[in-house]
Length: 242
Length: 210
Image: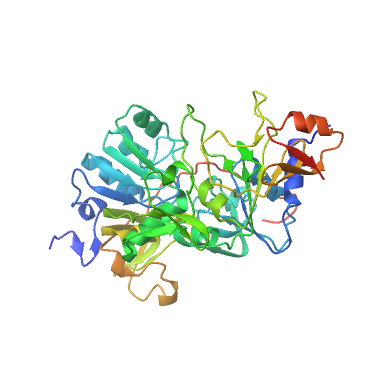
């Protein structure tokens, strides 16, 4: 046992990510740049591990988030649903140095869920008649064609949560939950960076979004950049207080 | 006089019924929200994990972790809920979303939709488009009637990569409102001053006028 750890709780993300190796399959939670495990991503960049497979909805955006790993040439393959607004990925994909596997977003989520839930695959109507179904089994069920999709798993998942306790129970904030609980279930090791670390019991059992058995390592990270891709606001009506 | 963009958006908003769960695609469809009354019992679904999406926040309300599928900052209305992506797409795939209003590149009179990529252009990925097209109970497409080069976007058979087959119910363009009819479109409404001839000339499939 290393001095940098107390049960599941690690002192720094670098300690928690000591297990990083070349060629790892890494799932990373977040939707675009929102809800990313920012400190974990920076730690992966610092370590310089290579030939990574990144499984994430977007693989960063606008040169930030996971796109930093692309800039560093650490990524060999990306499994995702959307790559718009990500010039680093577009360039390396077109240049043939990074492989991209696109999934419909719901299929992507369900493949990860299946990976964590011990399901060997599933039939879905999404993607029938499209490039997504090419080379896959098609089966008519209840009068509708379905395509067979296989689960996704990873060696490591990195997720961010608003609150986490020492047992790894997590609670997420607003739309930052997205793929994170699913990914935490589908990886051999999940590292959660939490805005606030609390004692067991501080999160009411009914308010736990992800039970701690899915989380092996917890690190408290108080400061986040919280990059906003499109800051859209409206004007407060005149004389409406505040 | 064909419809303006605003007219088209307003006409699309008229597709929304009381109490419905509605998902609005990225781009022009997003603007449909501006024409749904604030006190309406319609609930907007955003596939990144929000049901009960509200308007853009006031400047001092912005929360970087409360965004819509277009990654714009939004708010949550009273009664809203947040959830993970598997549950969000279970809502879509499971037929719990009543209406999706989506953008389009090509719609065939069979209801086939192409709206996610153009060969030769920079690929962006399908995101949630295929799930929404295949899963929503009713799909309305909001798009221009013809492409910039004048090519019809309402066609007999799509030529671009398919998003989903036989999924579209209705198309709203600057020229009118069109339902898919299998081997033809049915024009159910014309924009003011638009002639049958003008519609027929701009459409790559048979149009019947109701």
